[in-house]
Image 1 (cartoon, rainbow, N blue to C red):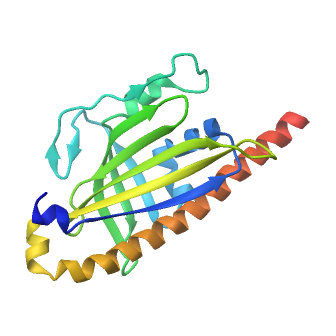
Image 2: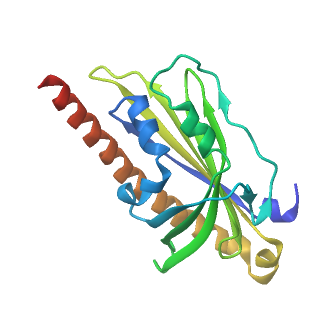
Length: 206
């Protein structure tokens, strides 16, 4: 492991959501609608080209992993179109809360019987490259269907950023700010999904 890789960090958030896995997954992969269920994203717009870019460099296309063939709640064509898709994102800087613009690429999608996940990698933002992996899996709940959504954020600085700043001191502050922002987004995401589940249940009972 290089010095630059050792200077990076990972953090995560985990939230229990009282809603079916299929509903939460459908909400999670609706990437363009992320600003509707987030406190830190301003806009997300798909870039219509076939390049897969991670960390500012072209990467070899990675296919999604599908292990379920008979789940009617999964739109496989939509997932095939989503893998390696590129997005122009504007979010709020976790420090000054100013708009931050960057390109994000969907680099991984996995659907199995027990869990579903997708990963998004960003080009260099302010001297760092990040990968965010969202995993959704069912859990036992006495009252109704529920699931757990876990988000793992991995951040690696570029070498010039590490050499130009005392990054080891700065990394702890960046990690806390990043985790705080994702925790806030998790609360909004949870509420959004649970509201959708309640509205669906009400519609079914009428």
